Picture (cartoon, rainbow, N blue to C red):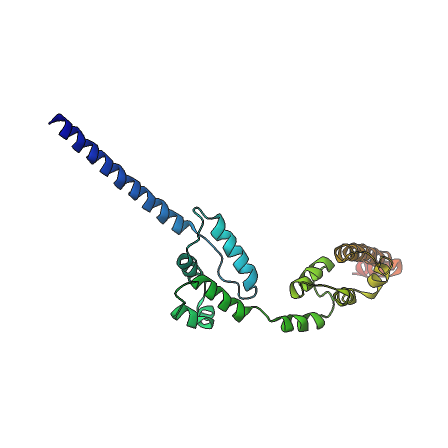
Length: 215
């Protein structure tokens, strides 16, 4: 009788432990699912968005690896206009590879073709509001295989006086040229501002002072 009672007690303890473990696992999973955060889909840079999203999947606790879970996370990060662009995949995803299928559809919908990137590269018109290193980074995003033509296109976006100075270092790599150009333009800006102050006419200041005195 005592052995039976001990066995029943052991079975009861084992069952309680199992239930407690399952409840804890469920709670941890729920908290992890709620804690996952990622930015809304970037229509202007889909490729970079997926790089960031997949980094979030890998660093999540626990890592998110299930195809269906990743697929659902992406859906939750799409706005209505983006969802319409890939509605066919959302309504009828493949039996396997749902995430990869949706990823491909989004990249095809929002990533410019190489021809479009080449056209943008050829149509660049100066620095704009970018610094030389920023321009170089943008140009590299349009063409990942820069050669002699790429180098010439980059230099042509710089002011003529900067190009003349850079021509003295024909063997420098593009990153060095961009940093050098940035430094030259900073120096020229300071020099221009200094000349502007120095060119202020003392006579004009005197006239202004006289006018103020007359008032």
